[in-house]
Image 1 (cartoon, rainbow, N blue to C red):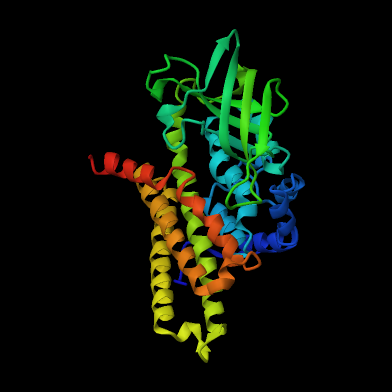
Image 2 (image 1 turned 30 degrees about the vertical axis):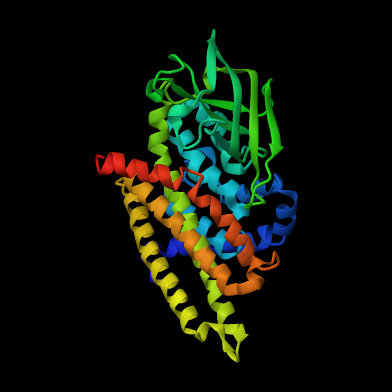
Length: 387
């Protein structure tokens, strides 16, 4: 693929560490995790010990002390390269989506209480935004926590929660003030629900089209008493906290989309060079060459675009509109590439034993979670174009 300038020698060393860890701890266990529908909880202790969790957390709390998003990107790329990307979803959610909330919003007491465990894998985190009637649209969040002295009492449910089964800490987005019809900008708060709190129950591990090793659950809250000490950030300002941190989450999903598609393209190129039809490799047919050439070109363009956005993020210059552009474009490209790759595999591409079949179904959700393509375009049209 195209030559990249995003990484230096220290990143290359980290990449080798990650690749070795994945080959040793993930690849042999991946078939079992796919079958059981969840990664073993003990895996996260190994990931923490290997330095794959909490890289951005200060060393005083046991983290890596390096707030460099490129380390997150490397982890994503190596899971994809090994063909086990969906086994990394728990790590991606933990590092890319959840840790920024704790790093930027937690009080000194909360940092002492939670950050060490989030680095070692003793604590795995999730965030619960989606509800039965509220997905990409945060305006529709209806779950409510009523004040009761120094606590909040939470009732309701959340669905489609990544890390929902394995998580120990769940950041719950809910209303804590205002009337039901009031806009969420001054009504939403982030409450940290801890495993074992009375009234907190997990539903079944949801059966999904793809990403079978990634646990996804329904969560139920019945009179869950959450102490004020578990409010993350400012009460009533969660909408703004979310907007600030969804930028990195969407960039992370774009990174997943490109790495996943690049890997699938590599498999397909090799397959078409070896597979013969009518006495010649199928890669040598004009249609195959044109399809492969188009994919290679689009992936090179996407990689440059993504890397530029990562550089902007590192410099503190990436805004939510640019992240939305990157997220939807890369996710839609992933769909096109994976579909073409499966087609070039022919009947074999539809067989479970071929990794391209799993990659095809695993990538489909990238244009849905973290904000659908349609919502990304709404953000761009409204905020960037003023229409």
